[in-house]
Image 1 (cartoon, one colour):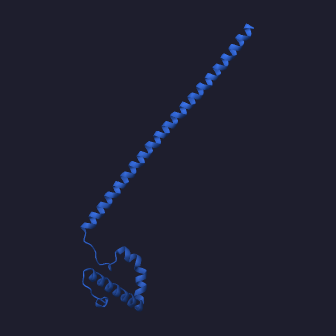
Image 2 (cartoon, one colour; image 1 turned 180 degrees about the horizontal axis):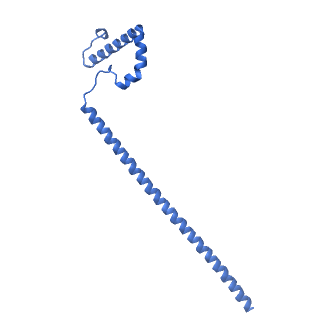
Image 3 (cartoon, one colour; image 1 turned 60 degrees about the vertical axis):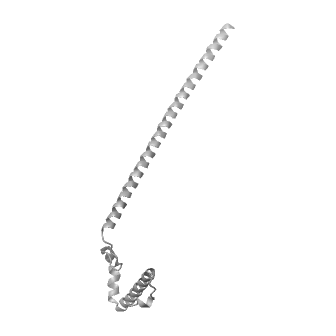
Length: 140
């Protein structure tokens, strides 16, 4: 009977030892997982901060470029004649311009429309300045 108790105690001790080892391994795994999770979270936060800094730098650079453009635009004289095409516009419109120049009727129709548009624009400008003049006063 004493021997049975000792065998039973030894068996229980082994079971407790195995249980403690399992718990220790589980605790170590959880600690590793928690550490990895913390590191991953810190890296993500760091990455977000770096991305935000990069966005701010890009926005600041863009703002500086826009300010520079505004300063340059303010320093050069304005081209108020909207009928003058830039070189880029001429390049884009050249095929149509050549087509129109071959057809005299088309050129006359376009000139008429342009004259009407200019007359309407001048009448509108005169009306803004307080001089009520009729559209027909400006028709060429």
